[in-house]
Length: 446
Image (cartoon, rainbow, N blue to C red; front, side, top):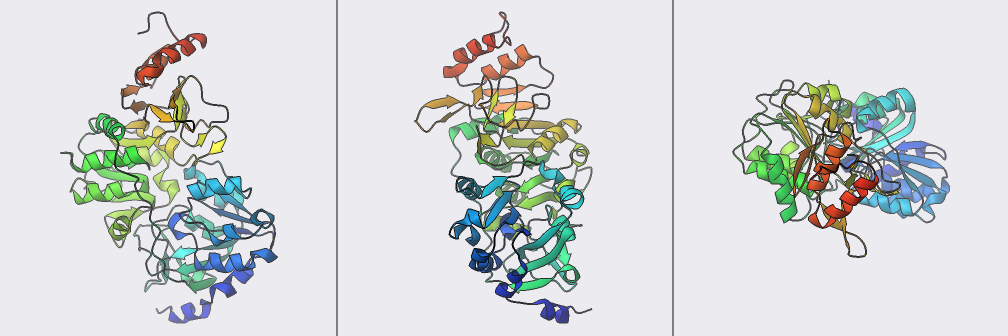
């Protein structure tokens, strides 16, 4: 069956498509690399005549044109499922807000609680011969968004990789309202940061030595997980698997080094499973039409029950800071929102439930404040306003450049002792004094 006539009937200009947006509407802008471009530009041109429009999206990789209009806060609000640097700046401009939610719950939240989106618009890969537009490296929650949207507008980008999956990785033309052919911009890239520091390497070495052959990997974003990936690529490890929230460049390097086969995965054997991917062109080229990679919705990838079914699951994530109680903050600096809850807690829980599994939260022992003074990332208590991403009852391994400790099941004096042992030496005496005041330090402690 040919869908050429259907395509032609639904093909309109970006300017024509965005006329459906009205004041008071809820408009979904997709996610990361598929945030609309031509549609965004066209909508920005008419935002001045609209008010109280609510947008949803997340991890913006470029500044949308709607953000640049005059008196933006008078016309719309941006509601983010996960913050990027662009969105953090928008918070200060008064029109952006974070939506706290475990990322794994997002598809269900759309289907059972939001239930209605006025307009959804996002980029897609070109339609295939079966009439499907692929979501690119963003299965995530897009199928759920489309199911509850009154109007679905797809912006075709010939440069968008076609990412194979198995379910909910695309939308059929019969479910699309309008098709827009955009300017085919290059897919936005997200670098892996600068060269690894000595601290990154020290932390990575402590984690890599814990990974067995045949393990299944999840890597978070950031310098330390990226360095772990580089070390794995250079290691003697073999037959590794991948089941992750975010597919990053490090997985490409590990794959090309021949370390990933997925041969020992209990489910999705032989396939690298992910909810979304963002990185460099190397990553997009690798994911394009690659049957060894599986783009899947986040309520599958991040479901604790799914993760738990994979033996020897190794979860590796970053943190902003943590306290002596074992509470981990991975999303804010005091009241300043940095990122979001994402799936970190899901992977902390799922990895521990996995047979032979381990979760690692890694962080440098210190950072420099705005005043240039060195500060400890391990604190007596979290700063006022800081978010507890991982509760103290659920954390497993904590790693700094000074060592790794397993907090699971430890009493308060034990975890205070262990965390202080991997804090920067310059701050240990001060932390001991605070632990004594907090009644979580024994005289017999080291």
